[in-house]
Image (cartoon, rainbow, N blue to C red; front, side, top):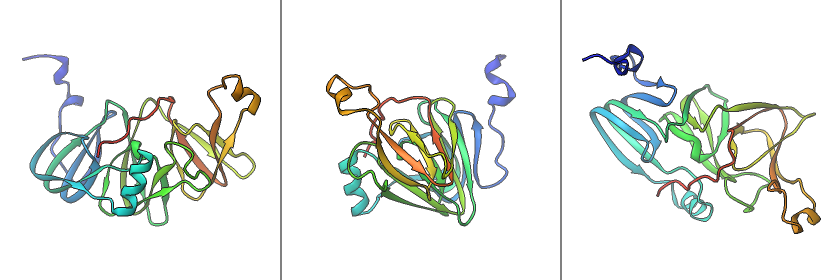
Length: 224
C-alpha cells in the first residue's frame, strides 16, 4: 500500500526515554513510566499498560472553578506505555522548567505536564471576580509542560517602562512575577453608545513576557 499518508514524518518512532516530545506540531507523545497529568479528554491514542483517572482539585480550587468556569480539569495517567495528547488540532508547544521558573497559564491552554511540576489555581491579582479567564494556573518546579494555542502564539516582552495590555480571552500565559490589574480602555460615553468591544483588558507590568493567541473567541469551559 502506498500513500503520502505513510511518510516517515507521520510514522511513530520507538520510544527512547520517558517523558514528552512533540509528535508533530498538533500532538504530543508522552512515554509514561510512572505518572503524568493531562487535560481531561485530550488523549487521542495510547498503547501499553496505562490507567486514566480523574484528578481532583481540592475543595478550594473546585469552588473557584465552579464560579468562573475556568481552571484545570485534569486526569492522572499512570503505568507504563505511550500516550498521545492533542486538543482540537491546536498548535502544541513544550516548555522546560528549571528550579525557580514560574509561569501563569490559562487553564484552557494546558495539555499535559510532568508529575514533578507543581501547579496551583489562583485568582489573577487585581482582577477580582470581574470576568472569565481571571483564575489561572501557576506552574513551578522542575519538568516539562505542554501547552496548546489556537494559531501561532505572539510573545510580547514586558518591561517596567512598557506595560502590556491584553484581552482576557486571548491571553495564554505570562511570567508569574508580573504585576496584574484591570484596565478600562473606553469611556463611559462610548459604553453607553454600544461600546467598542474592547472595554476591559488585563494590564501586566514588570520585567518578563506575555503570550497571546491570535483569537478573541470565547473559551468553552473545560468539562468537569
